Every structure is written in C-alpha cells, then in structure tokens.
Image (tube, rainbow, N blue to C red; front, side, top):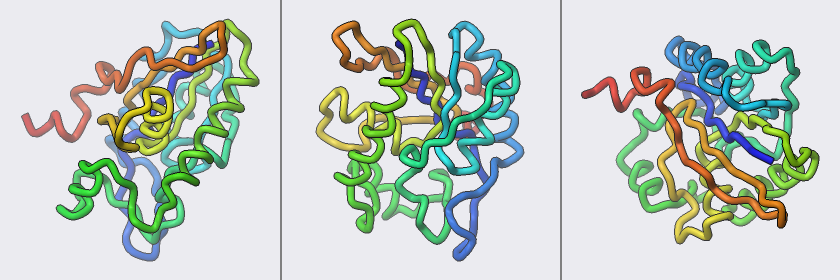
Length: 199
C-alpha cells in the first residue's frame, strides 16, 4: 500500500493565549486548492487527518474532489498542539530555529512519547489498508519527520525539510515494512512557498 503524508498548508499565526490550532491563511487556502490536481495520479481511497484545523482544512479540497469524508486520528496531531500559540517557522526566534536545526522538539515535549504516539497512529492506518490502496494523511512537519526518522533510523528526530503542502510518500512492502519512496514533493506549490517568494 501507499501512504501520502501531506504537511498542512500555511496557517495563520496565533497570539499568546489563542492556542496552537489556527486556521489556514489566504496563501494556505491557495496551496490546499492545488492538492486535488497534484495528487490526481494517485488512486486515493481514504483521507485521514490530524485533529488540528490547519491539517483538516488542507485535506478538505482533496476529500471534496474525491467524495470522501475525512477520518480524524488524534494521534497524528503535532507536538505543539498544547502550546499557548502557533508561530510559523518563518517567524520563529533564533533560539527556536537553532533548536529545530539541531533536530530537537521543544524542551517540554517528551520526544519518545511523541514518536510512539505518531508511529502507533500510522501503523493503524497502514494495517487497515488493503495492499493496493493509497491513503492520504494530512498532518504536520514533526509528524512526517517522526515517520521518516523511525523508518530510516536517522540520527535526529527532525531530520528533513518539510514544506507547506509538501508530499512525502511511504510504501509498504509485501513483507510488511514501510519504506520512504520520496520526501517533500512541492512542485505543485513551489511558487507559493514563503522561502521561494524571497528569490
């Protein structure tokens, strides 16, 4: 089976006390609108999402195009779900950026528990899928990194760059293990990514 791990599109920033579950920004809505065409070559049979709004809103255009409902799995939430606010990476402090570049989650987050939660959620999605099925999972950069780290045994938990609306493909072998087929495909939103707008 094939698993498409899609990072949420660009969300709004939230302020302290507003929680870490913002809606998509106008740019993020445009990014999400491109996903049905970008994923049309894949025979998606299920759409699964993190419970956070930015992931659900990113998956909705694909679900609507396919006439599917979005299944919510709490275990696919990002590590920041209980923080007081959400800050897009482009606005992160130097200290937060350095921590991320060093491959670490915030100090208050139990990395082992986060990894166990995410892998259990993905394992169940995979176990419920048929051999020929493709499942699209809308989630977060930390979640996608956790899966790549788990499969590839990377040194750092945060091991790959995952852009907004980027697509990472995992394949399940006949022997039952997951392998990484591709990471962070962004051709469909290249011109809408904040880092590319600077060039």
